[in-house]
Image (tube, rainbow, N blue to C red; front, side, top):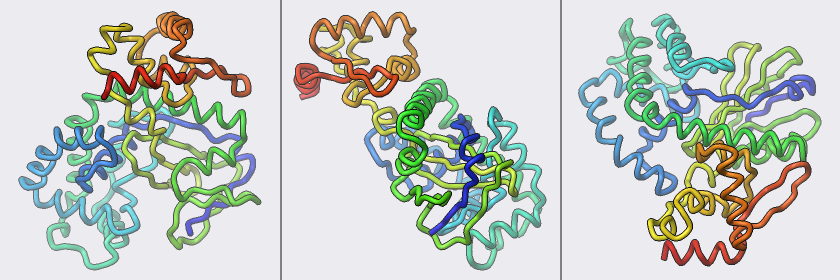
Length: 319
């Protein structure tokens, strides 16, 4: 199994951060797989998979590159650099473009675990990789970025609250099916038999949510490490709101009710819906008075969740 030995100071200084590049790379992985994990991903693939496949058909070098770079159990290092905190997509992809051809080809040999295809024996491999990533960002991610950003911010709010309530161990266990806090500063990052890595006190440890159901780990030397993980399912795969329910209780209140199958805080609801704090508060008050949601306290947080009556209403509106 992949194991990181994390200094307690490094863990205490770790942060949840947004990465447009990580979201783009996760979307590329989803396009490459071609199969969604839930109806929301299937709908997105239906809209963008034909264009992606046309792009690869028109550029055989890019097609060979993505197959080689994603590899069997290892992503080519140059193709997926570790984003810095606050770094925009263009800044991260510029680092892909700046890699030397020999370094890129050496990385591809590792991810391929075999000989380099003839199509990739060329000097412009990094530039082709940057062009492919830019296509995925511009055509398939950027049009949805504002909504995705709110979803990712809500996930970070939830995870940060979880840290304050239950400590890092519970959060690290929940990032993906195979991440585990093993105690004694040991963190299992995946199921692969990679050599352990020691994360010293001065290193930057980042946790980056993405909306597609995928995950990976990356690092830059010994200075920066990142775990990319899928955000909470209730945020990524929102239940659609029927027109009838919207007409009955109002579209904004219906959107909140649809989200509250899982307990969420006001801050999370603001982040996901894009509604203002005052509007969310007023709508929650109406839903509370109608008996459709209830409040629960979790540590210092107040969470809202659908009542049995709220569940009946949701089922009736989607039946």
